[in-house]
Image (cartoon, rainbow, N blue to C red; front, side, top):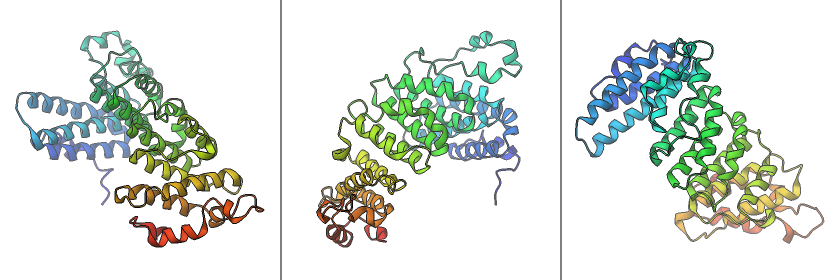
Length: 365
């Protein structure tokens, strides 16, 4: 039964439960209920954050390790995610950002004295004034993992409150100047989350996204997340695949017609998945579609004896299955010999029948 519209009284009571796992579930329930009925956010967020503060203070007075400490961390993270859900209401956005600000720069209580009186009363400028706090390019360098977490939570906040876009964009631009892998991965994860939630809105973030496509400047995990972001927007048809593909290839310093798959496993899998988005406009761009199909075939044939790389081949076969068969096995110009086809028909048939990738057989048309 759907309880997302039920009153939040029980989850609020359980937000102070001694068990961290109960508090985690209660926070998740509160987040769902604030999203379902945003008008509940202004009254729900203060007691939720008070419960989080009380639990954090109590935790600092105890010495825990292992699974207990992990459970406590998960409970706090769930509460912070619930706080971002409270931004679905305009009056909840200032409270949510105030809760996240300490992750980036220490938030002093006397800073509230600098906020205009209308903001403190929840006036019309409350959201805009509060969003000026924290997450600025001039912020002091925080602890890298906390910074990465803050970026992902800020993306959560943007998913519920589009007014946070300037802060999100500034935070991502600032993160792209970091040399810490954790921060770069956190920023790329934030971009991927935005694309999954709102592909059209995420198109406004293509500026910082370009940075994360360069394998010489970011770790492989960050590039894999950036490739996933591009694929998500292309699949939603809010980004032209072939224009995006040129940017992706150029960022890697390769030629569009001969771009090899990335060496790192995670980025290579996302590269193979991205190629499948080329089916959408393949009929209108046969030459470009042939090059993309050939790149997908190269991924499918990547080190077929390595059982640890089945994920790449699985993704490549899935990409090939999205194309019309004629695009794969027919030469794009129509007059060339079968040897000019993007994918050799006999080798493709043999691969489908013999490759050990777990879901290869599921991609046969």
